[in-house]
Length: 515
Image (cartoon, rainbow, N blue to C red; front, side):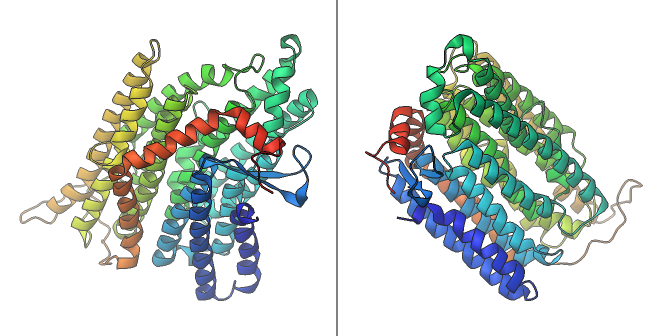
């Protein structure tokens, strides 16, 4: 049964085919890339249906048993992450094609498919070393996508992004070497057995490895104090790339959940509470940085990037509890915030393309100003976590799960204040972009020395350009309407995540796994 490996193999085969055979025919490349991404959605739906019964499915490459061979593991959580990636990829790809972003540089579709390969592989792997390999695949592809179409600011931000992630990759290698030297394995299920067997007095190296891994994953997730790369990177990346990057930070969150819950969970000497101790204050600080950044941003893309940062802080406040209830709440909020951030970047692209600048300053209104205002208003509500969309429910679930004394005061204050500042920041931006702009053309309106004088292009958005944002908002609406059904699946996924014994039996045993 080879279905589990197909989300990795499909984009891995499609990427070089597009790069070498179709690189001179953009229509053919677009068709192949979109067809492959739609096929990935179908595969992800099938895998999610397969995982719904609660069985942990294992794919052993070459039929080598774990921990000696490479294994891919499918459970409710990994299936959910692959499905989230595939659906987001379709939305982003349609926008990139409709807006013409894919022709502004070389090899966009090739790099896009390699990116999907790395992300899906990171979610499915059952081995920390292969997690590193897939991290590198998705990062190498993201380097090319980040500087797609060039530009001085984009190249500068891309250099910072490359340097920061290379440093993270170096620490990752140090962590892997330290962990292997102390345990003799890098298989996650095998680590769950071996780490608790190490005497406390000999567990110093394991603690060092656990800390290094947490730092590496925090870099990927843009968690304070290693978050500074994200605002510049997301603000200067091409809009479709920034929208796809909304799932990139979730890879770091997933890695922390998977590794620190299974390998360094209960019974691990000196590492059981390590992640929770450091993650919680870092998450609070990340919320503060993100909210203040939204409030003080002077550019639209920069403001959205800071809102992504704040959403990661909110997510990690729940993750840091390492409980089933808090994790299920975090997963619901993660799905919502991923689509909300992507929609914001896509609507911002439509607005900036017609305003000729992303500076938050009054300018003559664009055509379809009302349509853009409505879409921005809806996506801003989603990102800020206001009703009636699912962001409100996600934050409510997180607050309900964090009622322990000593945690409740800090978590509730940070989330509520962060949400308030985010709402104020988006309201200010929307007022400047869509309300004050109309005042410039009102009868008798004067001119202002601070008002940009650049002409606004009379460029109407086509239905295909607006469709991805509409689709994303529809998904957010469905997520809110079906919150009960989705929450049930996420609760089961969280319970399965914390059931370490079933995971270990499936990967290392013969009872539950499937070859």
